[in-house]
Image 1 (tube, rainbow, N blue to C red):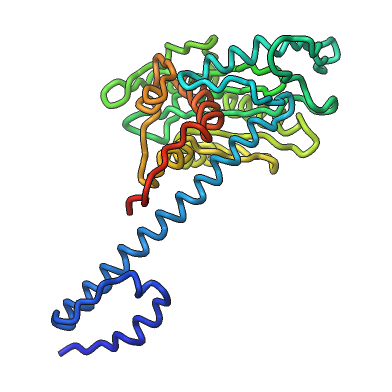
Image 2 (cartoon, helix red, strand yellow):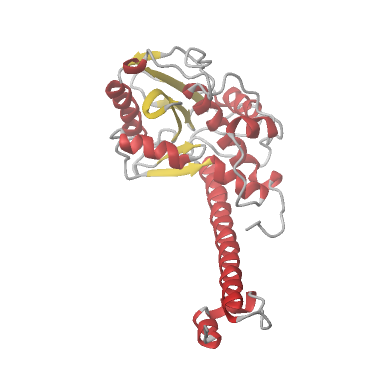
Length: 313
């Protein structure tokens, strides 16, 4: 016959016991099992709430970083797009009017343009780089990397720079059974065929350029479901500069809708927020649209955030 001293056990759980319903009429083993299940459920709900609080803070930080980035001075009259990020970015490009001089430094445009002023607020800083990255691996062997794509948004000129590297080591391998094969459908430039080492070197070079653009070495790295991409990059030997700040659009969207279990895929989420997209599962395209999604989430977090009740456990 089992005997359990529930009072010390309850006390050891601190305040968690107040969230658990007792089952005094059950046999002791069954009561103990129910108690453990209730504790587990309560702790799971608590962790979900904590994740959501953290992700909401991350979303707020992303908004602040986009609006406060060098080259952006967001007046209250800047229209916030509720349809597509493309419209917002196009408006910013039209208003910037900045060119690079021969020395490579940006010359601020005249502030006589109509609409809000978004010229650089600091003559010493170039624009901050926001870089999104995506990795495509072989559907039957995820250790074989087929594509690396990344997209850069420069806050100083409000333009995208997109790069797509197809790995020549695995030119003979193709997806198509479980994942669409879109390796030859890059929409934002020309695909570069390069071996894995050369592709990683090109990405590493852009990370280091991003870190050199301001005195604090600060730049942003973005991905949709960042955990998997970071594992790939770390495994491939990429080193990340100290000033790098990470944002995961999967988590940012979960904060937006108020559900810590929300794991909406990139394509579905782009459609949900009305960002036009084509030929996903190409690493370059996915990186570009992830960056557009990041900017949409950052710019619309205040006006579009869904007010949800309790997050699901």
